[in-house]
Image 1 (cartoon, each protein chain N blue to C red):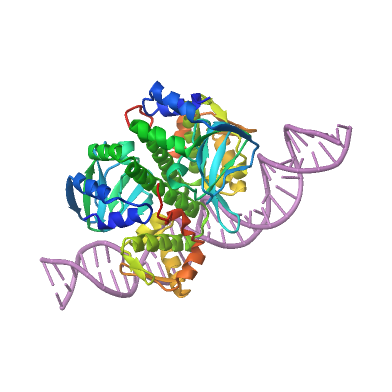
Image 2 (cartoon, each protein chain N blue to C red):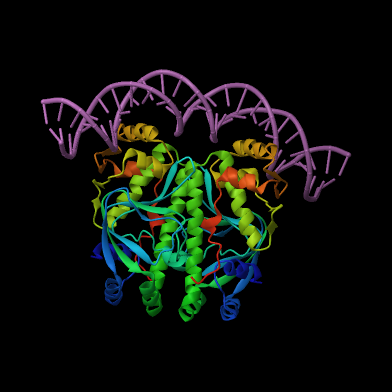
Length: 239
Length: 239
DNA sequence: TGGACTGATTTACCCACGTTAAGTTGATGA
DNA sequence: TCATCAACTTAACGTGGGTAAATCAGTCCA
């Protein structure tokens, strides 16, 4: 059940069989959700963290007028709220973008296992820091990249992250976000997302259609985005 | 030396005298830097983390054409690169905004002390998660807030964070960023920052001049920003 | 087989913010 | 006392992306 999660961890740090065993025993429950459901509501005390097994989820914040900013997209193998282990409540909502399957890890169990294995504690600490690194790259996009580069960036990042967990390759990946949701990731309106997606298609860079992203020219995509994957920390090493 | 840092920690979690003692002994060195110096360069392996004692620093990323996005502003008491403890190298540069004094904490010492005190490990884990929460609020600003709200937001956040460490009150705080730098925080040009700062002054909300931010009407400032301080996690509790 | 949706697409128009280019102010110091 | 320089300020004009309003194209049932 944890295969994708272990793939994600192993890409960045050695994971002992011992840790994997202990983690498997922590799962208190698995759940299924439909699309567009809030799974972790903001400002509500949490007693477990949620691991995404299948499907897409996101975290978002919004303003009073309803304009929404997705702050991160989650793919299978990601903890969607590992940070609730130390924060206790979240400053944002976490919702499903597609139907999903998730597993719950009680905080009490996480506390015990991270006290027993300090190296595993650092691996998870690292993983929340990786989320922060992704936030920073998105801040750069939202603050300084133009629309084409923002969308190219989003596609580049997801191609890499999905590739790690076996859900994508150089040709592309399944990508179920609507154009409205892509706009909520990139700080654009659906109309401008549509214009920009068309530009990327006409330039022979990437093609988005019906839940699928085809990467036609990965080098060109990375160039458009000024994508530098080092912020995803892809070397395996002790943490 | 660590008074401000302890104030920051104590605002969110109980800090035992024992921890404070152990931390004080970890400091390997203190250093002074002039303004506009890179203190932690991106993509260079780090063996210690840097605590800001006096002055202002920031972390930033930039694009090939030189447009820069400041991803976080640091005030005295903040670790500017605690995340390098697990990440090993940073995906961004860390620089001074004013002359500063910093203290260095070797990663090896941090490893030992966090293994000895798992609760202290969680306090520092929490602190890197707090940085991520600030990144998310900035993503919301950059993606969805308008110029006035972005600047109001920045001032609101800094007033709270500086207040915690005794460097500001309801009347305002010393704020040495230039208008160019404020633009680099908020994704705006210096010209538009200038227009917007004038609007805030003319509306009687806040006044920026010569290194000082005077908050004329805090309620109005928070309203402009839609500022909700819960993302700063200001309750003291076990982490 | 044909509504009823949801999401994609396009057009026309508009505006918040960017760009460029002059000043102006104030601190520093020879 | 004047030169210099960095930061601030303002004005005129341009544009990337927003807004509003249709239309189109699948898909899902009844």
